[in-house]
Length: 240
Length: 240
Image (cartoon, rainbow over the protein chains, first blue to last red):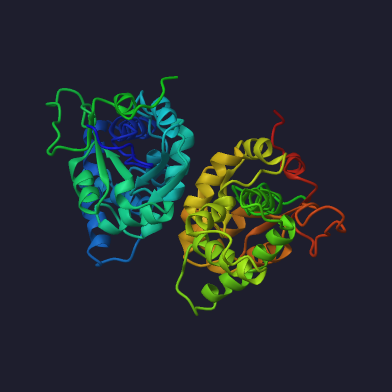
């Protein structure tokens, strides 16, 4: 907990700054309601998200050239609809619109204000698997402000590949140890640490919905925080 | 002047949003004064900037792998000092500090406010030959806000190569014709137009100092504006 303050903070976005499950479920519920169809919207969101890692893995493994996450989300939506028996429910335009649910996720309540605090003490950047366009639109929707958007588009690869973290540091002209990855997912932090970055773990007990056991950090991360304001406090960021 | 409003505006930064010549000259004057040495700071700034295109051309031509503009500025500073007879005046740390003058340029007076207006009607992005780190630090210093930083680091090449403009559009998931390059330099706009983007020309009569003939646009650009507020007016952006 006494590591020197990093010069840049790189943020995971889906789960760490935004409630992807709640946001996607809300969009799914609205789309199905407009068609008069019944669905368990949270189960649908979980199934859609379940396609996320396998789709990226095809890029990470080299089996597929880099494609932006927006494309993967769109393809995964088709797959999820088919698997859950809704293949003919939506036309192409409706599927395109529903896939953009990822651009309209709600922030976790602490995220907008705490990001402002953290910007006062470090460069801040999105370091997500989402595309620049997806991140830019999501930031506007969710009221998130950062200095720049790094991540998958810059590296043309997906986390947790080391190149994504290293490209982010290089773009900022910082050494890995001068930066910290901020995430609620241990695997993201483990990869960042392996690449030489520092790591800040944020508790997001509601990421997968209520009634789950609270996640515990798997390693002694450089910072372990209840939420982003707690991280800001630990890093000495002034309070508003 | 009646083209539909673009979905994204890509901004040149050195010259279009910021006064590179005034900012660099001020930093040069301070560095030389600290050494008790006399210099024509504006002539020095012009000479330093004169190395800009040749240095980038070595990357664009493939003679040199991509190197961030910060590196080129630093090398060009050594070259300029030597050419002007100041080779031993500054040590390495002082040269490093002086090269960071490009991170502390003043904005043109209209830029911060007009960028806010333009953000209300389009995605906004830096599309500069500066690195992400340079742009992020400059934006903080100059009070410039945009949605993201695109440009050279993303494409690993330099404007006016078409790939820089096209990589910016792709990152935003927009077709080139849905975006507009905003610049005070005809050669930047000509390359953007050739790549399929729209083009907005901004008058910056003081870029090269007072007493110069006011530049005139070389083509019928989609928009021709006296300054960024004039562009915002033409695009129908609400006034504050």
